[in-house]
Length: 368
Image 1 (tube, rainbow, N blue to C red):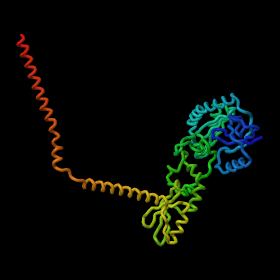
Image 2 (image 1 turned 180 degrees about the vertical axis):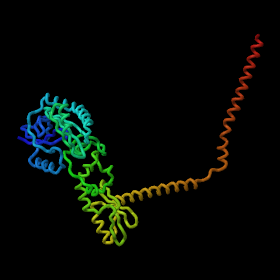
Image 3 (image 1 turned 90 degrees about the vertical axis):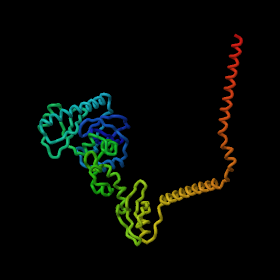
Image 4 (image 1 turned 60 degrees about the horizontal axis):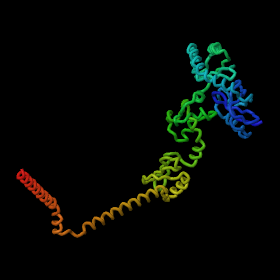
C-alpha cells in the first residue's frame, strides 16, 4: 500500500489515503464528515507525510482539521461523478433558500456557502458571526425544508475568502483559494520587518486580515536586516555622516548618501566592507555602474567635441577658397538672354507664315 495526498470538500481539506495503485481522476473516500469525492495527488514518502502533519499543526484552528486520514472506498464511476456535479448545481439554490429562512429568524450571522455530501445524508452550512448564536430553531426549519441532517460550521473571515475565492491586489487568484492549504499566523512585526507602509489598504487581503504573502519573504528579510541597518540609519565618521537612503532588492544594493551630498549605490554584499572602510577614514571607491556611466558620458563629450572640430575646419576651408573674377560672374549672369532670342525667332516665323498665307490668297483670287 502506498500513501497518497488527496483533496476534498469545498474548504479544500487535505487527506492522507492509502492506495494500492496510483489512480487518476476522482475517487470516493470516507472522511469524518461522510462519503465524499476526492482528487488524489502525488505519492508521499514517510518524510513528506510527517512534514504535512507538522505543517497542519502550525496552521490556525479551523472548523475541521485541515489534514485528515481518510479511507478509500472505490474509484468514482459515472454515477458518482454525475451525482457530485448535481449536488454542486443545487447548492446555489439551496443557499438562497437558507438565506431567506435566516431573514425570518433575524439572526446576526452571515451565510457564506453550503455543501451537500455525496450521499445527501448531511448538509453543511458555513457561516460567520461575531459572537455565539443560538440557531436551534433555525436548524429545525432548515431540516424540515431540506429533509436531511443539517451541520452548521462557523468559520473565520480568512476561511470565508478561501471558500468564496476571488482576485487579490496582485491580479491573481487568492493563494488560499487554489493552493494554500492552511493559514500561518501573521503579525504586524513581519510587516515592519519588511519596511512596508503601514497602510491597511495595501497590506490587507480580501478577508481584511494581513496578506498571507507577507509570510513568504519572512526568512529573507530576517537574514537581510541582520546584515544591514534600517533605512535612515547613519554612520558617523570623520568625513561626516553617511546615510542609508533606500534599498533596491531587485539589483541587490543600497543607496548611500555621502557627506558631500552624492548618492552612491553600494552592493548589499559589500556593505560591511564599506562600513569598515569609511569608519577607518578611508575613501570608498565608486560603484562600477557609476564608473560606466561616467565613462559613457566622457566618450559622448569627446565625440561631440570631435564633431564640432570637424565642422570648424570645414568652415575655415570654405572661407579660404579663391574668389571668382567679376568677368566670369557677368558672363554667367548673361545666361538669361537666351530666352529672348527664342522669342525673336518665334516672332519671325510667325510673320513668315502670315506672308505665305497672304500670297496664297492672291493666287487663288487671280485664278478665279
